[in-house]
Amino acid sequence: HSLERLFKTYLNSVGGNTTFNLNIPPMPNGKLDERDVKRLKELGEKIETSFKTNLCENAKISRTDFGDYQSEYLVELGEEKEISYFEIMENIAEGQRVSSFRIICRVGGHWEKSIDNYTTVGSRRICEKHSKCDAFKLIITSSRGRADIEKIAAY
Image (cartoon, rainbow, N blue to C red; front, side, top):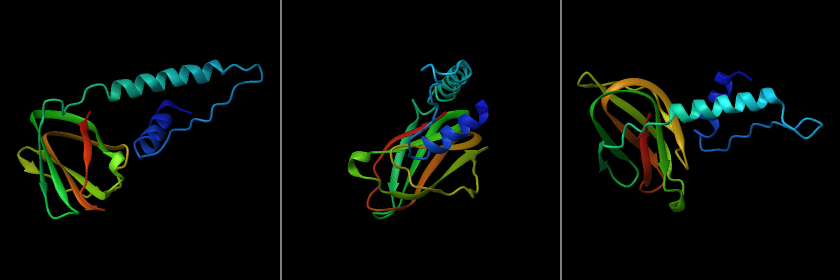
């Protein structure tokens, strides 16, 4: 498969709270095809460069709860940054709680009107959303009990 297709599959599987099964069998001689090895190396490099720098490292993050089932995380980056991917992780030791959420960005001092609605977070959720913003909100719109978000990142 093309690098683009494999990367999209990665985003939809690992970034969708599941495993990434490439199903690459060995050849009859027991070795992997060199073309597959080359493509896997390219994929590894693409994943590494895409998720290398977490733009939230020095961000100010605050949380507001609206009862037991809804909450909002405000992430202030301090300056405008170009974001391609958002990553959210729940504290899975406490169980998967988030049922639905959305992410909105502050662009030019104004909060965008979001039409992106996502389901479940679980162990890891990656949302592809290209934006240039100085802040964003992770809005938990529904959860089974109080959401326990372990990580919020932007790349």
